Length: 73
Image (tube, rainbow, N blue to C red; front, side, top):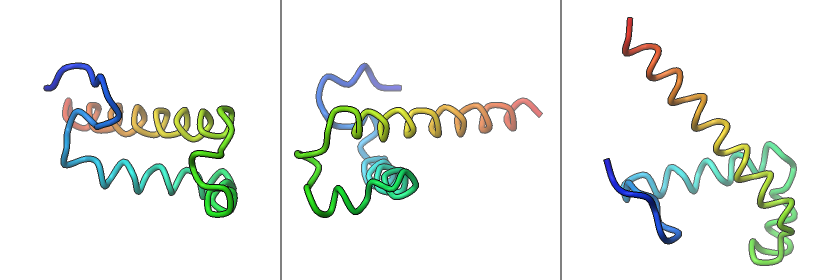
């Protein structure tokens, strides 16, 4: 397992594309995909990108918990 990330790159480099797909999937689910397309990521509000990031974390934790519970069986 890697150390804490100190930059904007994932700890597992091979996961970067999957995380990017998840980011866009979450933005789409939250109805923010058109805003991102029209304004770009750099012009999204802190609230909007926070909502995307928070939802990503929620989904990743849920997946990790599911994976862990299946390992114990």
